[in-house]
Image 1 (cartoon, rainbow, N blue to C red):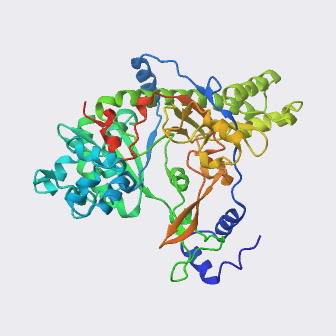
Image 2 (image 1 turned 180 degrees about the horizontal axis):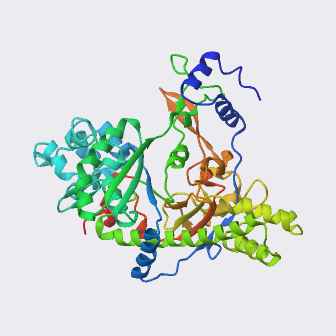
Image 3 (image 1 turned 180 degrees about the vertical axis):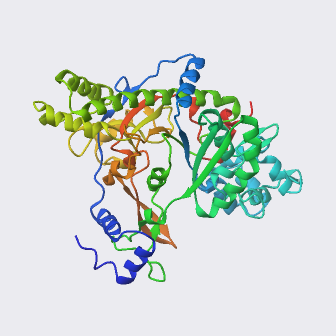
Length: 517
């Protein structure tokens, strides 16, 4: 299919100057025209059928086993996608302040049902960790004529005249209160890193993906806190950053699938969702990578459960890795018996959920080739929490393009909305994905896998957005824990619900889990 007609020579110069490949952009244009194929889910993964329930060990036993791995030289890295702006947390406050231009108007609006969350926000103002800073920004004056200064409070909270929270990244907002002051998610991740991600030399490697406009602020915050936390936890931090790479941005089109053009006739490219971070993840050098979102943090009083959960999952990951590596060495030497080959096959099918194609049944050599190909790839252990009505992707058995089945984290956008039987399967999920991943990214020879090889490019999706009042269609790359890891060895393990405490809206910070006691 030739798109050269749609892309001028100026376009091609613009594409090259971004570091993008013309072929990729043309492929994106093709996807806009033909759409992405829907994923076919077969059934929800459940305990005993795709989700492993870990037997609870004594915490001292888990810690000892984990420390043994660290002492043996395991090098963990904590990878935190942190480029999200906080503006989405404050949507309801922005909507309210659009309408409330005076404090009297604000007071009247607060009586309306649609603003009950704003009411709650003002009612509980003193419980937020940024309360002291907010009062300082208002020169200590919260009230006027016996009423809160609603308009001024929101202005000081959200705009650059005050705390600028409407424009900061989520990672730099004050989330939790402590006696010594407030702590941001970035600091909470630093503390978490000290608790479970230090190597045998007490070095904690943390990697944050950030937006270019926020990088300086992240660096400042970390410099400000580094020494204090290093001293307190007896570690030293090696903290690195990366930005989403411009060449991973995707082209936008208009409603006729023609390239969307800006006023200067230039093409519009947009960041392609968290799937673009696969490039960043691929650059990180570690044996195992912990992945967790920036806003999923808790105060110190609740960190023990998270720490033990991470250690338990890592122990499980390394156990599987050892077995996989041993089997690959056997297959590599090509001197295996029929019994050994069958043993490896049973392990692959029953423990790693890999289905063997029919044509390998009577041919040991093609079975061995198939097993090498399926076992020699990155592995991820994904924590899954019980579904308590939180939105998000979930764990499913899905059909691959070659007819085999595999475990996948599936978002609703990957499912055909007009297929009632597929929607029914989607609604039967007992668990959902809290983004709590542990990734093994080295092969049995100790070399790093090229993660770009194991993604499924057909699992992107298209969304409708707007720019300068004009409608456009945008394309997201396969999500980092969906299509970007589609061909990994995947294990789902149930983790305690307390390990998942995201902050999607400002009032989530009022939940018991985010409060001091």
